[in-house]
Length: 329
Image (cartoon, rainbow, N blue to C red; front, side):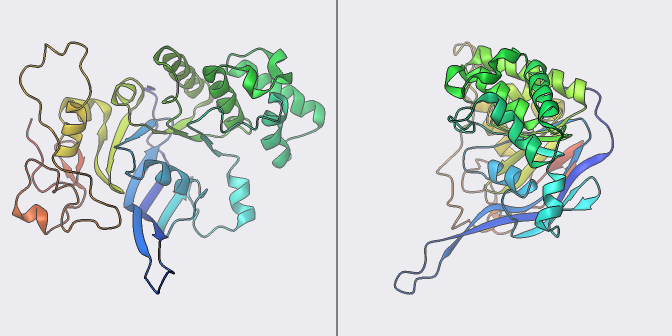
């Protein structure tokens, strides 16, 4: 976690949506719409780590990819460093991608097994016209040293490394063209706990050294508490709560946030301090969202208004929450 966050907004979204049409085409049946990202508005500040949490399938990864326009948004705005991205052409977007990069979840699947590490690191450099072959080789060596690996590994193939080493290579590739905004998509979830700690420490050191801004996608609340400056909680394509890490963990205001925290296993199951609340029912289908608050079918505190009126994100007690009846702590 960095404490040197700037007030400048690096990236923001306004009413950002990404809908997928599935099915249809058979016997005249209409397609159905999956609302993977459904009206997300947020701001990410310079040199902060903004963590996005939520259950699998809530739209976290889709949001990260749409921010970088690896997937095209259905509607809404994405503003990076004062530039609105959704109207840019392919050439203009390509130039901006030097400054916006991603570290993927699976450190093996994201690396071409037929390419040596030097080729993997050189590929983004060549595609953006970095310099001469000698300068590219020198930069590849610098990148390996930057992530704590020996330069002699440049001649090796991905299968010759451990999972943690491969993720370091993925981080090095993302940093090749000196970006300032990096999406980390579950970038430590595939690693053992001890290796997770090493990679998180590396990311924190790189953030301080290179003045990076992270959009950190994860389902691991323990990692969030250690690593993030601010947290957004996502449920079925929408943000339901946003605040500083300290605020969110000290007094969650949305029932979904509270229930996510209650579901985290405790080191000593005997020290429960009473029964913990549990979510009810099943996650609604993103193709058939319930009316009103989309969490009301699982919320133990839902009332009549929750079943008919969808709450908007509003400021409440220091951070923002989308709930008709925010929890009092």
